[in-house]
Amino acid sequence: MARAYIRGFQGTGELATAKHFPGHGDTSTDSHLELPSIDADRSRLDAIELPPFKAAIDEGVSGVMSAHIALPRIEPQGQPATLSNRILTGVLRHDLGFKGIVFTDAMTMRGIAAHYAEGDAAVRAFQAGADIILYPTSVESAFSAIKQAVLSGKIDSARLDESVRRILRAKARLGLDRNRSTDINKLDQVLGSDEHQQTAARIIESSITLVRNQGNVLPLKLAPEKNVLLITMVDNTEGWYGLTPGATFSSELTRRHSKTTMVSVSDRTSPAEFEMIKKLASMADVVITCGFIRVAAYKGSIDLSPGEVDLLKALSKLKTPFAFVLSGSPYLLTFIPELPTYVLTYEYYPGAEAAALRAILGEIEFRGKLPVELPGMYPMGYSAAGLDRSHMLVQHSF
Image (cartoon, rainbow, N blue to C red; front, side, top):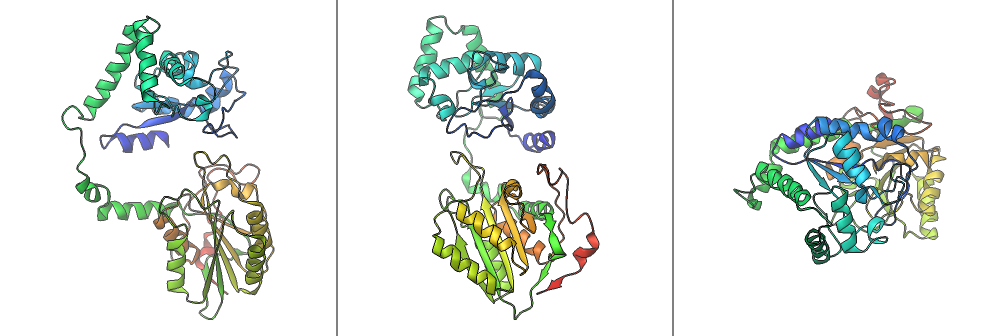
């Protein structure tokens, strides 16, 4: 998957960056907030974490970004990978043979900033093997510290030249020596053409995944006289940057089925409001919930509020048909295994909401497969639709 992404990305003249080296997947700590530690030895890295990076390097990836994670069994002095010469130069440069640009992750993140002075962190990252110190807390402090380290001989000028040459080669490859600006008036033509929008829609529709469908309630065929309750559930109300989660799904559903009642819940919903929604659900003929759960910087957790979890568990006990559509992290089912239906869209795009609605109404088939394992439940590549496609042709009236 990494190789295919890199081919597509770099085939259009961009620079792809593989991150976060040597692997951030086995953490439960957000490095934006604190420094995670992974108890993995080199054999574990070689077997699990490093193969995607090796594939990326073999594909010619232009950049690699470091992780603000400690690996005490690899770097016994305890410094995070971003500041570890043993990891960035030893493992990445020497063992894996990477010759492109090494970026640090943002140096403002507390995995670094809470433990090292800003100038010292920049020098340590450069000594470890980084070429670009990304987003230091103070650019002036980082620049001054590196300059002083070069003047004092702490950083060898030949080592500085190596990084400068890598950066200049990358800029030349992008043509930045000839044209350093982008014509923003052409963005809609380049990125938003009809052809590109059709391709995006096709990809999104192909990704909608039916993971669970107890009682074969999906796809739904909503009889005109039936009452539908649509619940839009977000992890929290902040950080959507102008997006309104569920807006496309709700507008498309009400256009198709006028007898739809819509409610929204979040981490700020009161206990009384949750009780009212449970009563509405008990009176509805069909309940549909669209969940939006992000894995996001500085969020720290993917969990819903206790009230939201309790509501989903209560809805799962209804005899009324209940369809659950999740945008974002696919792992919620491992926290709430009672959910009788489970549809994944992965993304928050309006196009993903529209595609999910079309799928649960039977207008398109579920063609997606799980890209990850849901531990103890479903393997990578699983699809409930793939078990018996014949039932997908039968729409159930409620």
